[in-house]
Amino acid sequence: MIPLFRSGEVAKAHAEGGPIVALESTIITHGMPYPQNLEVAHQVEADVRGAGATPATIAVIGGCLHIGLEDDQLVRLAQATNVAKLSRADIAACIATNGTGATTVAATMIAAHLAGIEVFATGGIGGVHRGAEESFDISADLMELAQTPVTVVAAGAKAILDVAKTLEVLETQGVPVITVGQNSFPAFWSKTSSLKSPLRMDSAAQIASAHKTRAMMGLRGGQLIANPIDAADEIPAEQLAPIIQAAQAEADAQGVKGKEVTPFLLQRIFELTEGRSLTANIALVRNNARFAARISAILAIKDT
Image 1 (spheres, rainbow, N blue to C red):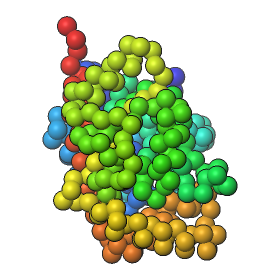
Image 2 (image 1 turned 60 degrees about the vertical axis):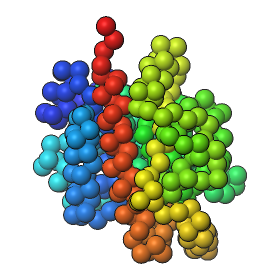
Image 3 (image 1 turned 30 degrees about the vertical axis):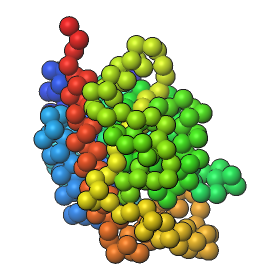
Image 4 (image 1 turned 180 degrees about the vertical axis):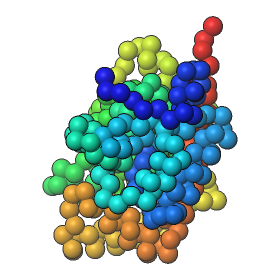
């Protein structure tokens, strides 16, 4: 097993068997500019601590897999340029070549599992892109959920995706998709959608119990916990739908393909919503971090 470099805070929590929540780092390097990215990273870590757990922001720095970042490392990562965006396909290569990279959902799940962390908070997972029947553009996040036993708290799949097809792939892969407190599957920036959630649970305790039960049954893979954005912070789906369609039409017209599609769409939606999409994104990430900490705190209570 490759060496893991735990921050002092994470190492202490790990040694004591305390609750830990994994956090991805692409939101820092690819989500927003400095210094806003650093401010949000600090806010999300503080949210996890405030809810009773230890945050572990994950990244590869100089070929070393870091589980939790010291503040000076977080500052340098927030200011860094040309940082690789790591998924399952390239995280090992980045480590082997002494590279530096930020972890996506899939890579963060892998690192969290290696470090013995059972819960991970993010914004939204990747999924099946619109037009995937021609492009075959499907995020590695879905396959990771099918094989790595980490509970992932997100505000659903990113609304720029074909969410219905994303749910179909997750079902085929046997991934439990559990929405918190409502029957409608959330649509990332929007609290509800027209899609019914496959499963519903109303408490962190129920979700923690489901996580433990899967482990006892020897079932592969993790759980996707769809935690709806608070109503006060959302952009209603009916307002977003035409904006997403317009952004997608621009991407198609300009021939944007592959890994460039998501950042292009997110930037155009940011511009077309006059920044509201980013404000909502920050709110939902923080909401997910707090809920993930509650799940992790329950899992850390050992049965007697």
